[in-house]
Image 1 (cartoon, helix red, strand yellow):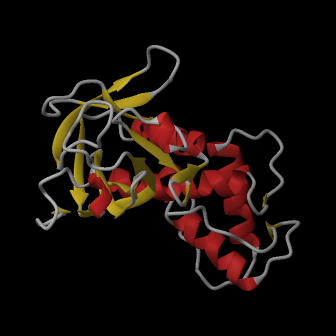
Image 2: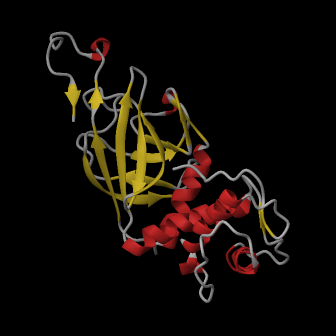
Length: 245
């Protein structure tokens, strides 16, 4: 799930293109848990006093701005915070913090997929290809893993999977390329061929959402299917079924 894009600014000093106004109205309505006293906005694509006031309240009460400008600019902090809080609303409603890594595509260099929290798609994932669970050379087996938070060392805040068969220290952490992986899972807001982008932003988002849920127990589920190319199949296994699911 990417941060919503608006063509131009919305609010008191905005251009207020109708479709952009509707996007902001929807984001605010999904963030009302964090704005007690603010009424649900009509999603009518029309800028007006209620929408401008709601933007101002968001900037003051959630972002802590002493002098809010009551305007949402493309790609700037107010839009990002609105998106984060709109996602958090859906996650908090469920009262859980369950992660699911849905593996989607395999190559000889990586496995890419999506990461969901309580069914909400948050970002993308990058792992090493399946290589029969070899330590530091393979992604981990499908399954569900009780997980914990780690903050020690130089990698900062991250999630460590527990109980992975034959493996230890498998983590979800910052990184963009396969050569940065030793059997762990990288996350990013953008995805390309065998790479992620904006990994730091993705980890910050996971951390914010975890804190907003009250720091509950974490469970990570890994699902999907991976098609192994012939060049990755060990000798003697060519011709056998190569779909791992």
